[in-house]
Image 1 (cartoon, rainbow, N blue to C red):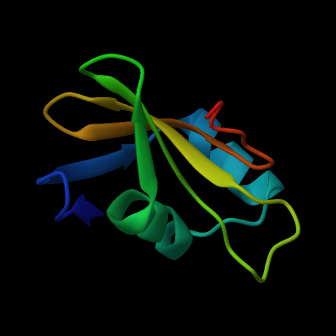
Image 2: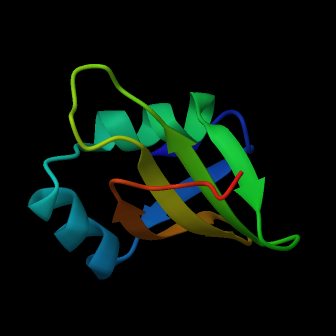
Length: 84
């Protein structure tokens, strides 16, 4: 997978892959969150990307990631709150 928005490859950790299975989130939805979701930065390299989906009852869906040469997706969450 590649992100046009961030101009880099996307890599999923084993942990993220396990959470995707547990939470019934596929790669297409992960890519949609990354490409079109809201962004909240922890610092210049760590961020959360999140988006709500009307077809799901466990909103917001969130990708926690690290930006380096690639975007490393560390985990995938549901019932996320942005704190805003």
